[in-house]
Each structure stands twice: as structure tokens, then as C-alpha cells.
Image (cartoon, helix red, strand yellow):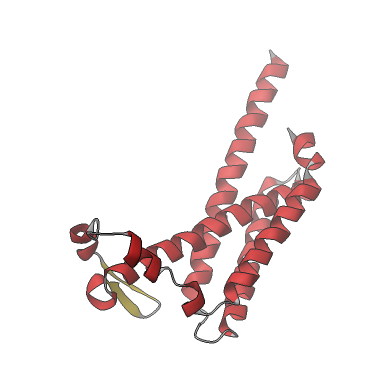
Length: 174
């Protein structure tokens, strides 16, 4: 298992670079260039789950998020955007840890910590870069969300590696 990961290290590095390139490009776009509201308005009729979503109200970034405040399509877009934040950093955390595996293969706790902190630093840099873009503002809450996505991905990956290593150890002993 360890050798398979180490043999693919350069591919993991390229995937990390690709993801960072996508994030850099995305954070360079204005909200108007990036919004999916017109697409949602055109393609989602009858406002599915409206009554369920209408009962949801919470504070994010100092603003109350709700259908009442934002309208249906902007509220749905909020969940899509935040889901994308969480998801892309989950994937980035996984591939960054796979890239770093060779250097920390004997200490998975340190591997997880370094991978998580590096991904969190990249999220903070991305939010800073986003703040340089017109019509966009950096949010600490987004860095926290990105960081949690990375931590979740890293935890899943290391759990899978642990299970595989444990299974392989049992096969050797039997």
C-alpha cells in the first residue's frame, strides 16, 4: 500500500497544482461572472423543497441567510457555493496528504496535521486573493469551512489507509 502511494507521488503533486490553479482562477472572478442564479432561475421550475428551505434561517458571515432575506435562488446558490468550498478543499486535503505521504509515512498524526495546516493556509491565501477581486470579499468563515472540508477528507483518507494496512498485516500474520 505505502509503495503504491509513493510511486504516484508526482501525480498527486500535479493534481494539487491543478486544484490550486482552478481555485486561483475561480477567486479571480467577480461574483457577477461566477453566479449560478440565472442558470438556476432558468432551469429549476416550481422551486423544489421551497417549504423545507423556507424554514431554514441561520447566521453566516454576519448576515442572516434565509429565503426571506435572499430569495429562493440566491439561497440555493449559497448552499451550492458553500458545498463547493467544502468539497474542493476535501479533495485538495486528500491529494495534498497523498503527496506528503512519502515524507511522513511513519507518523500519520504529523502527516494529518501538516496536510491540514497546509490546506488551511492555502484556503486563507485563496480568500486573501479573492479580496483583491472586485465585488468579492474574503471571509474567515469560508476559511473555516474549507479547513473543515480538508480535515474531513484527510480523516477519511487516513482511516482508509489504516484499515488497508491493518488488513494487510493480518494477512501476513496468518
